[in-house]
Amino acid sequence: MIPRRIILAARSCTRCWGHLAPRTAFIVPRKSGVRRCFSTPACGGGPSVMEDLLARVVAPLPTYETRDKAPPPPELNSLEFMNFYKSLEKEDKLNLLSKLSQDFGVDHKGASELAVKLLDTQLRDLATILQVEDRLRYSLVPRYRQLLSHISRVEGGVKFLVDLRSDLLEIISSKVCDTAQLRDLNGTLRSLLSEWFSVGLLKLERITWESPCDILQKISQYEAVHPVRNWTDLKRRVGPYRRCYAFTHAAMPGEPLVVLHVALTEEISNNIQGIVREFATLDAEEDANKINAAVFYSISSTQAGLQGVELGNYLIKRVVRELQSEFPHMSQFSSLSPIPGFASWLQGLLSQWRKEGRGLELLSEQEWRTLEEATDCTPGTGAIDALRKLIGTNEWTRSERLSLLLEPVLMRLCAWYLYGEKRRGYALNPVANFHLQNGAVMWRLNWNADTSPRGVANSCGIMVNYRYFLNETSQNSALYLQNKLCM
Image (cartoon, rainbow, N blue to C red; front, side):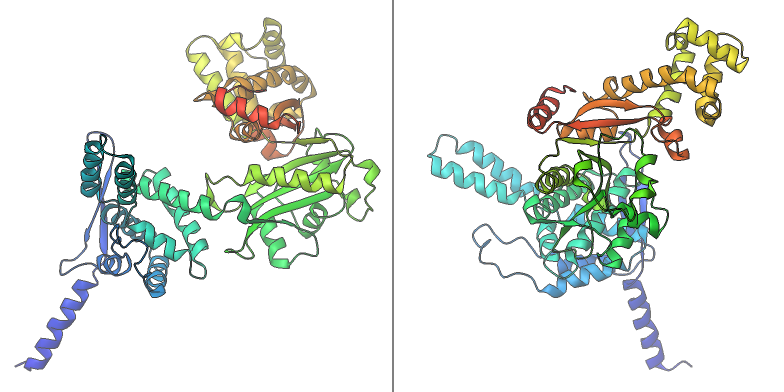
């Protein structure tokens, strides 16, 4: 016979394991096309660990009357949530964020009652109306917002929230679980981060070869436009005739948030290889008389969780003021920008127009005849297929004859892609949209500007200068943002 104390101990363990049972997420398709997320214990038995945790750390929203008097929750709550979240696998993070957004958001019933009350007070005095409006505004604050705010106050909390939003954006963009509550949580986080990372709280730092080694290493790792090949390459990019600037924040020490690389040149550059592979400047002494232009050739955001938080445009404006202070005679400010997506857009256009029987409109008769002769293909759809193959394989770059033939064709189509292709009235190309929002103008297309395999594959080797005329940037930005006019 088994002793009674062993039976009781076994039952106790069973209850314990049931309490700690992991939860499994189920994604249920709905007729509307929106998928809804549910979480349920993988094994039955008691409330989940997640539910217990959230019940502890997400404090109830204080009443309107006590909102300024309620004591803050203990710091331990924030640390417990952070440590728990970091310990989770990807699927469990989704479960936690889903439950946080669904069960600890806005009190919709209370907000609706206040909205009705506000309508009923429209004939009352202004003071009464304003008070009801303030109550309604307070009732629309999600309960989890207080937790997020308190997390930001503990050491490492801001960085934690930036990374959490990165996870959230990945979940939403992948459509694994795209609910209205998750989108609202994302909007709340973005609003908070925009306040915490406002331009007045950012510090502009110039990165040099004397900067801390870990910062230099991160600058190298984060470079997203023109990869840094080695330490010698990095040394040149922060050396003479070059400038590297970054925004940093006191809450994230040692973490550059957005990085801008600048080349100081006599004229506005039309070729990136002349900037990133020019080693003659490595040990040179700068001659200010040879510096007439600043060329922004790379800007990289380092934190995915800060997507949608304006940093890059402020960085360019701050750097312009910094350079004007150092070189008062400097008057030319321009980017030398890649055109990501042009080649894939062109392939899609050729495919679509071929199906519609319109492909021959893209080139002149003479251009088609020259292409047919150069590729020994049949006229009509055969020539269109040959052009698609040339662009897809980059074979044309190895033939001077094909390069001469395709230069006017690709430059013409690229100009249309940048200027004519729109999304909701704004430039389809994200880099173009960024610079046009800042008030720059499309100034010049450059052939064979990036002959690296990546440059040819992405944009057929074409790059573009977006010119910043400082006296016109504010007006240009307003025209673009308000009237969708490209200058």
